[in-house]
Image (tube, rainbow, N blue to C red; front, side, top):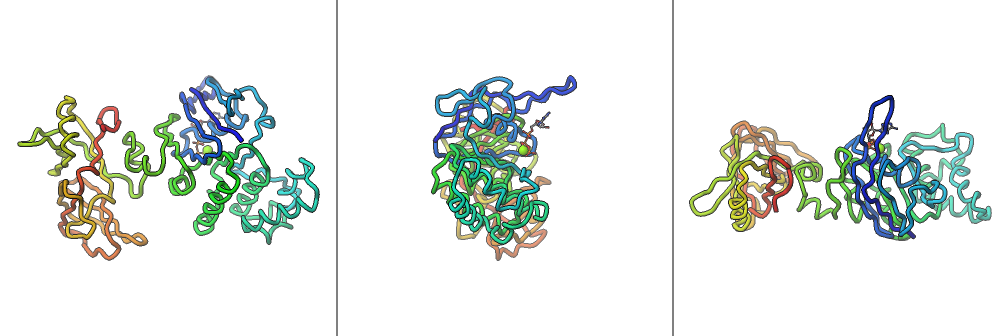
Length: 373
Ligand SMILES: Nc1ncnc2c1ncn2[C@@H]1O[C@H](COP(=O)(O)OP(=O)(O)OP(=O)(O)O)[C@@H](O)[C@H]1O
Ligand SMILES: [Mg+2]
């Protein structure tokens, strides 16, 4: 068992006089037995972080600890980590069964036991029918499941999984996410799962670490990231459709301060205490964030909480997406989105009123993009 702690970890790649700062001052702790996902857009430093944890990449500065042991200079083999990467790394001349069996053979597990373990895992990953084949004969999704199996068959202290489901079709992916979560609950092993897909991260992980531009933005549970994003990036990245943003300024108001959109006749009520603090703060420029899920069509049953406000806008697009409808709305040229019931029949050009609760209005500093609590 092992907890993992990264302390001020940096990775700078240097090639031909050119430097890329791939990971910046990263502090992250993954508790023993915890399942943490690292989530962020392509190029934000996820794989670099994993490769340093595993020992495949040198740490430019900072420290990595497994429990209390500093592992910076430890070989990958000595770290007792099982990993699976997006690319498959299977032995091409071995059958799938041999590929899965090999890590057990190396550890001296008897043949009968190996066979049972491989077949149990193959059933779990739904690859029983391809055990006799060679890797070259498999589809990308099948190869990915085999390489995931190669990691899962071992008995390491830590599992590190990097984009292991990127080539698996949506339907099977859902089942595999469920299985992986179950495997984690059964084994109780520390797991770090890297993905750029928020659905995967939020479905699997106890906590999600959101990265952008080489830096950690926020670590939190699904609820924390959704309801209390620390900045504009997290508010935008977490949630589907993304949060609506409105550049805004403070209006002193007659009895209570409120926020007014800069480029549209839209006003935003914020809770009294927060409005007073904003007024006392002396800043001028803000960005208001409102999630499409928190904009309720007037008259809809899920009406806003008592304290709140209303926006009026014109419907530009009505999209039916699965069990819901996404309305794209326009107010004075400013576009934003609202989520409504599937049966919502508003058409292009119709005017609608949307209610929101003031407690759902997020306010960010326009300059630093940080959430103002
Ligand atoms: N070996 C390398 N040499 C030079 N630059 C590299 C190297 N590996 C990665 N980089 C750069 O470091 C940055 C982070 O890369 P990394 O692979 O960690 O991102 P990522 O978050 O895993 O992205 P993706 O989601 O596309 O896999 C990128 O700008 C990348 O181009
Ligand atoms: Mg990567």
